[in-house]
Image 1: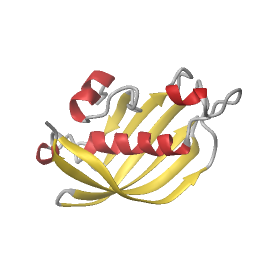
Image 2: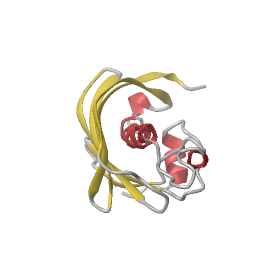
Image 3: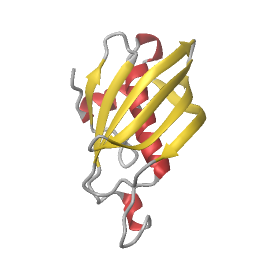
Image 4: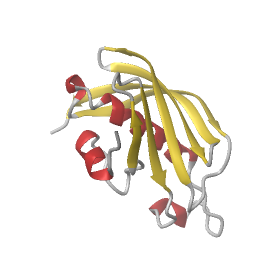
Length: 146
C-alpha cells in the first residue's frame, strides 16, 4: 500500500514546513512495520543556516522524519486516530552519514511494544541503502487534536 502526502496529512497532524514524510512505501497490515520516504530537495528552511555553503540536514530532523513515519503507522489505528504524537524518550541515537540536498531518505520503523497509548519503536533512515541515522523511540499518543 502506498500513501501519498495528502493521505499522510489525514493521518498525522504535521504540516509543511515541518512534515518530513512524502510517501509511505510499505505498511504491514498488522501495523508492526512501515517504510516511508522523504526527498530532500535543498530548498528547505533549515539549509539556509545548516550550513551555508555545505548544506546538511540536521540530525534531529532526520530523527523527526523517522518518528513521523512511525506516527503514520500508529495513528492509523482507530483507537489513536486524531491524537497528537509526542516523544517520551529517544535512546541509542546514532548518526552515520550526512544527508544532503538531492538525497532520498528512506525511513523504516518497527514496533517493539505498544501498551495503552504508549509505544516503543525502533527505526532507521537510509540513503542509497546506507544508514544515515537510527534510534529507539518511546512515544505517547496524546490528547485528541481539536
